[in-house]
Length: 331
Ligand SMILES: NC(=O)c1ccc[n+]([C@@H]2O[C@H](COP(=O)([O-])OP(=O)(O)OC[C@H]3O[C@@H](n4cnc5c(N)ncnc54)[C@H](OP(=O)(O)O)[C@@H]3O)[C@@H](O)[C@H]2O)c1
Image (cartoon, rainbow, N blue to C red; front, side, top):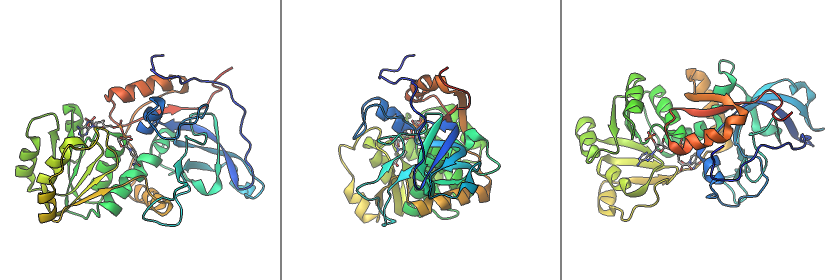
């Protein structure tokens, strides 16, 4: 295995659900950039010997004493938010995400509070179900709550090859917006155009944003996670009162910020992260209502999870990287 960090597959005790907890026997788990950041040591409060993984889908196998046993056997997905808190606008100081510091879904079993589980959308496969929670929630809040995207508005989804960006693309299209995308990869642009995007631009091409502005008339909403100096290009192509929503900063902070253009054009720059529990429910309903299927790049056996993390770093994937869990992992 070629990961540059000390990840290992090992045997641990099967967890026991207590009080209001349930034990989920996992069928599939999906990777997120967060798992990569953790495995590179670039994430806050890393606790050694933690099982990674925020996303998973499976079957309830046992429940704690405060949970009705009638739910045993239910097929579920897991809301990876832990302790969002009472304020729908912002998470509490004790907020964290499943899979660090508490044990996550890259395992045969996970124990989780019963209010974290939701019915698995019936029409989705295990892999598609596992792919949905974290990235789907992040995209949903960014687009509809923070970005206030409306039907027929122009939205630009930046870096559409990303796990969250793909949901943003699918959700925005389903909501009836005019969806445009950027990517560093022409194949990904072509794929999105074949799936309904009105146009695609390579962010690697010098001056791409001028062409985008000319062809579209500008954007009401931009959804981005790359950050860096490109932020100033977005500011140039916003319609008046446009909203730029960012949920990551993979390329760091911009060296300067075009504040003059921002205040004159009433541009909002809005940070966003995951989403509250109500938004999780709304996101799952939205997906069910539109019968959306998460885009899955590949489904691999669990013991290839470290090579899947390597592939995530390389960025060649289109869709979520998923591992299936089913057989004994270590015999
Ligand atoms: N705040 C939150 O709750 C939250 C939740 C999830 C993720 N995140 C953060 O958001 C970022 C993306 O996460 P992810 O899971 O979607 O990761 P991912 O699946 O690894 O996606 C990364 C994507 O970034 C795109 N990219 C690279 N350079 C770019 C540039 N200059 N301009 C535009 N796009 C560029 C690439 O798109 P192409 O392949 O199309 O070139 C790449 O596929 C990470 O920093 C992650 O930590 C935050």
